Image (cartoon, rainbow, N blue to C red; front, top):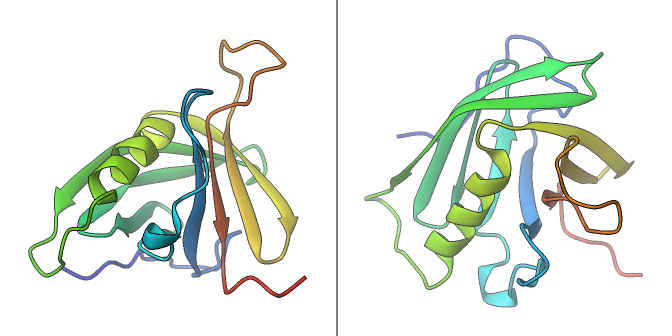
Length: 145
């Protein structure tokens, strides 16, 4: 099963494979993906669908671009274990946490620069001082600083 999202036109996030670098679900868990999991979790966004993986766990679902393409609405998010990939410790946990952030939520699109992306829960009932559930991505290798 190929892991690509179909885009009939250029989407605001391009046809880039966005590598997940952080998963923020709550204050009790670290958000950075461990070194041994780096590069195993990613998403690709099309104009109506998205696909991706967390190691051996594949993702798919529907997206809707809202508010002048500054918000993504995720629907019908599903995961399956891929038979063509080897599972490593952390694949399932990362997939569960990613799905927790994405499934049936509207996420604000934040672009700190051209190669980074943050999808952050819109609204929510957490206090202002608490970090919102979010996914952070890079679109290529991080440059040395």
